[in-house]
Every structure is written in structure tokens, then in C-alpha cells.
Amino acid sequence: MSRIVRFFLLSLSIFVIASASAQAGTIVADSGFRPGANGFSFENYGADEGYKNLDTAEVQRIFGRAACMTGKGATCVLSPGVRNWMKTTNEAMSGGHCYGFSALTQLIYKNQLSRFGYKSITAFGGTDPFGLNIVGNDRLQRSIARAFTYQTLNSVSENAVLGTPKKVLNYMIDHLADGSQQSWNLLIFQWGFQSGHAITPYAVEDMGGGIYDVHVYDNNWPDDDTRRLTVDTNKNTWSYYASTQPGIPAAQYKGNAKSQTLFLKPNTPALGIQSCPVCSGRQGSNSKYNQVTLSNTADQHAHLLITDPKGRQTGYRNGKLVNRIPGARVMHQATSPIHFAADGAIENIDDTPEPVYLIPKKLKLRIRIDGRQMTVRDKESLGVVGPTFDSTIENLRMGPGKVAFATLSPKAKTLSMTGAKGESSPRVTFGAQAKKNGYRIYVGAINAPSRSTFYFAKKPRYQLLRIGKKNPGKQAWGVRVDKYLKSGETVTYSRRYRLRGNQVAFLYYGPLAVGKAAYVAIASANGKKVKLLKLKKS
Image 1 (cartoon, helix red, strand yellow):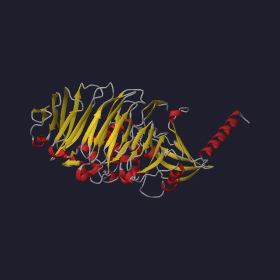
Image 2: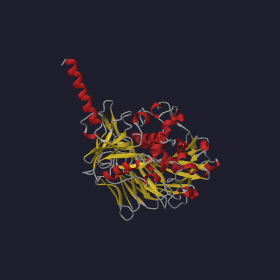
Image 3: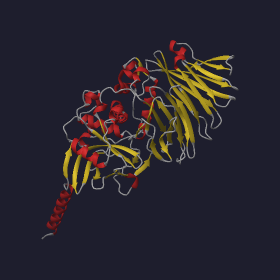
Image 4: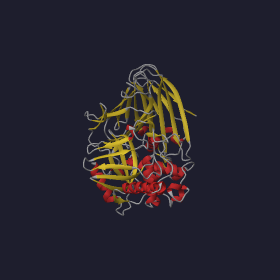
């Protein structure tokens, strides 16, 4: 037998063995979706690319007219709470848009773009998902951002499939190819709900012996049809290796029946106008919660611990996530914070975003912002937005050993905050509205002593905001008011002032609604002496 023939037979045997190995399993469910045809050709991205996220038009596609305090379409003026929600949601996408990739590609595959707001895929500049170009494609960028938000919607979360790996697997086997219009996003987390990522399950393969491979489209690896999430029904465990380079422990996702770190979220409940959880007044009357969020600028962030008047807590206590406040909900976010190099190695791992906490809207809360586990310093923002409250504490300087506090009462519309030791005081913002005008009010204590405590009380009926300090004494302040116009423009008014002794200050923003000046009123402790300072238009 010649060397050429022997080489041919050896090659043939290797091919046959490889083919047999590749076909070792039996496909038990298949939706027909394929990464190379129905996925995007570009990979998941964060904030570095500078792509577009939510704007007023996209928010209206989610919440409809309820999002607008006045106007509609191009003349919509978002209510302050909705504008704040849009800002914090856009910040949450800085780690990645994985959920948006998974959801939007499946809506295209299921021919549901008309319910998403577009007649066909040609609205994105192409005829098939894999052929679309993301660069310079604002409409596609904003659509991915809108689809990203679907994971936070009540209608989606209420229909999530949670439970053990076996339960989630069996649901996929029964429903991936059930002929319905429903499609599913598979959310995976490492232990402790770290490094959340959303991938697209499209087939299930029975490998024998109780082992199943779930075929997935991983938007971190475009056009890779070899990605598999494995479920061991004997041990009721699951695992997924997120890298293409072997031997990287941080790329290993796994869980068991107790971890609850593998679950499904549907797409169709997100289609159509959603109830607005952050709208105030009649538009937000159906919302039961205020949303508490934390955004950060570095690879690490602090953790929140929220305490109600009876001492019950939700958030991170001693490094472990707890939820003891009745009616509270904890929503973990999938952003894919692991950054891979081209060869599959890990370039960086961002800290998983803090969960979104949904807290019953009438509860008075004390919130601890705890950075004691951090190893780097950064600036963070605490947001509380909902039908009964709308405020953000910005520029919270956190880091190793740093702890800050905030106390708020939605009923009394009061907020007090104490910054971290050794750090300058953060800036506080409030949403406000008068007639058909929306405002964002910014208040900052200038060069305040470390760990100073400040308090604020909003009186919407009188268009007043009271501003004060716990300990009397000299203190310089800066106030800014942004007024949002139908044209999309923002008009800014600002003023600096100084308080002495027991003086208190009130910001009177009501006149801005009729084109007149806003004022800071400085009053003595007994209220007998009042000084008015006009805000200046920038």
C-alpha cells in the first residue's frame, strides 16, 4: 500500500471519527435560528465605541404618551422621572448591550419588527441581520439599546422562567420549537450573580447519559455556531465557558439547583406600549415601586443596603445579597462585563452592575452606600426614581473603606445625605415640574467639610425646594435649574449663594413656567428676614 493511499485512509478515518463525534447527540429542540445567518456580524459593545443609546423617541416607543409631560413625538418633553430613568438606563449599558443583541435578533427572526416599530429590516439598512453594519447606523444602535431595556420591564420579569437547571432545560426543550411567536433570552451569571450575560438559545442536543448541550448565539463571538451551554440533569448543574481560549477560570460560568443563576426571559411581552413605572401622578398610578439604582465609573463599585422603618433590609449585607423588605424585588442586569481580546483572552472584567432594587413606593428608606470591599476609587451616582420620588445623588466619591448614607421619605418628599469620610460632598438633583414644564434641579454644597449632612424638602404644590445643613454655620452653595423645552433645547439658570448661622434657603422655581425668573430665598431662623436672589440665565 503506497504512502499516499495510507495517508488518504488515515485522513478518511479521522474525518469519519470527527463526524461521528460531532453528531454524537440527538437534536431534541431546534428553533431554526443560526448565528451566521440570524445573528449580527459585529460583536457586543459597551460605551467605548460612542454608539447611540436611548433618546426621547425610543423612550416614547416603550412607554407611549405617558412618558411625555407635554407634547408628543419630536415635541415631547419627558417627565423628570422618565428623563432620569433614561439617563440611568443608558449608564447601565456602559458594560455591554448583550440583552439588546439577543432580543433584537430574535424579533427580526420571528418577523416581529412591525410590532417593534419598523416595517422591515430594511429600516436598518440591509436585508439580513448578519449583513447589517453597526458603524454610523444610529437607528440600529438605538434599537439595540431599546431592546436592552426589555430585561427590566415588569411584563418581561413576570413571565421569566426561573428554577433549577433541569426546569429551565425542560422548558427550552418544550418551547424552543413549539411554533409560537415567543422567543427567549437565556441569562447566565457566575456565582453570586456576578458577570451577568445574555445569550440566545436556539437548539438543544441530547448527548446521552443525562447530559444536554444547549446551542447558543453568544453576541461576544459573532458567527460562532460552536458555542454550547451544558446541563447535567443527573447533578442538576449547568456550565458555560465564555472564552475561546482554554484555561481561564474567570470565563467559566456554572451553577446548580440552588444558585438560581440560569433563567429565561421572553421577548413578546415587551412589544407594545408598557406601563410606566417611573411616571408621576395619574400616568404612574399603576406602579407599585420606586426604583433604586447605583451607577459607577470604574471597574468596581460600592454596594447598597436599603433599610425600612422596621429594620428589614434589602441589598448587600456582609457581602451577601438579601431581600427582607416585604414586596421588594431585586432585578439583576445582564451587560456582559467581561471584555475579551481577539484571541479569546480576558482583557478586563468590570464589576457586575448593582441590581435594580424595586422598593414599595411609600416606604421611608435609609440607604447605605458601602465601598469597604473596593480596591479602587471612583465616582458613583445613587438614583431613586418612581411615581413618588425622583432624586439622584451624583459624584459620590467611593473607594476602599468609604461609606455614605442617604435617608428619604417619599411621603414627605424629603432627602438627607451624608458623604463618605475624607471626601467632598456630592451633588444632589431633583426632578420637578410646573404646569407643562419639566426641570432638573442641581444643588451642591461648595467645599463642605467631610461627612457633612445636608437635607432637602421638596414642596411641589408651591414649586419650592428647601435646602439646609444639619449643623449650623457658614456654607456656600451652588444651584442650577435646567428647563426642558418642546424644541428639545435646554435652558439653564444658576446662582451661587452663602448661608450663615441658622439661615435656611428655599429655591422657588415656579416662575420659570411663565417665563419669569426663579429665586433663592434666604431666611433667618425665625423667618423675619428674607433675602431674594435671582437665578441668572446661562
